[in-house]
Image (cartoon, rainbow, N blue to C red):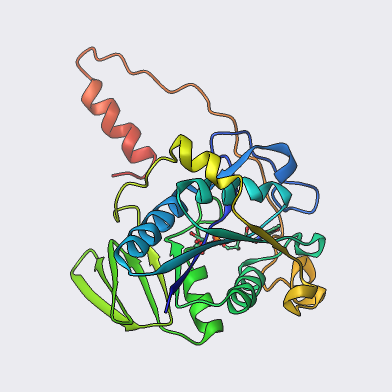
Length: 261
Ligand SMILES: Cc1cc2nc3c(=O)[nH]c(=O)nc-3n(C[C@H](O)[C@H](O)[C@H](O)COP(=O)(O)OP(=O)(O)OC[C@H]3O[C@@H](n4cnc5c(N)ncnc54)[C@H](O)[C@@H]3O)c2cc1C
């Protein structure tokens, strides 16, 4: 039977762009270009490698996000994924990680899966907690932060490199894994891949399709609330110390004043 892999990919505001908060303290997504979260490219790459090693596998890429999030799906399809699912609904505005994990879990159950592959964190929210929430909601094992991953005989195996130790981990399928930026360079989409992606199916789902009530998501359903947010102050010019014999002392005094030493 075909190995069904679902890769969760997030469409994020470009970190090099000028990002702002909207009046309701959510990120103003209309104001900045977006792209497939760089860390999720590693998840797509690992899914492609697992599929290449399997006799028969199908990769679905899944995103919860606004209309433009289709760009992230197209990139993943052009890398080689087979099909895509896009969950979009006006009521998702302001959804926090609890709501996002609920929506993703329902969409994954509807799609059908043996293995869910996530990135280690998104490049905007960077909570790194979604894969664990997803595993809990789906009621399956989680093997997170893997720098090496493979699937054999219904078991997913992987290596997690920690500060103090390297662990070899495994879990029986179905399972959720997340992979790190050490798992291997993500491939660039080829011209052929980009053309093929245009013809691959993209299914659109909304909250009704997933039997989710509007009050379970959005700002109303969020477990967390942003009370205030302030723009980061503009960079000021640095202090240049001219070394006329006292440079070392002045440097030490500066570091001490900033509580670095
Ligand atoms: C339309 C919309 C509006 C939102 N508004 C807010 C808001 O106002 N306030 C707020 O706190 N949060 C909001 N969120 C949720 C937030 O952007 C994150 O999606 C969510 O909190 C997950 O946290 P994270 O990005 O830190 O994920 P992490 O836990 O860092 O992500 C780990 C991995 O989970 C997967 N993943 C994460 N998010 C998604 C996704 N959306 N689709 C597919 N895979 C995903 C990826 O594989 C990623 O690498 C909104 C989300 C959407 C879609």
